[in-house]
Image (cartoon, rainbow, N blue to C red):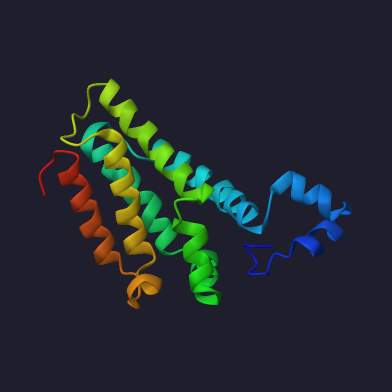
Length: 173
């Protein structure tokens, strides 16, 4: 439904699934949590694809994964539509610290960074948890600039974000 641009209503979803609304609420919580799960189910395969498609290790690897994921998201029509239809709600679901999507994205990014540190491929000058959070927030500022400051997201800004990540990882611009 989300990929097609259809609004998700828990009442109609429970009717479509032929289950009670109370059962659906027990399964998914609320609409915000359900959308977080939907978005994560799309993000996680993209992240795994980026990890598998990006060669090497170290700073270039981390930046390559970051670029792959965020460039794909930048050009995702379902995501752009979601943002256009209800910008404030989209921002809440995509970036809120209470959002399952945001927290999982930070955790997944942290795992990638820890794997690279454990392998001796990077030695970032920042705490890995903070670095991961900053990287995710930097991506969000590029991807959702239309909501945040009224400016269409641009590939050039994403490249600047990749340069900033490279520097935060201890690499050179």
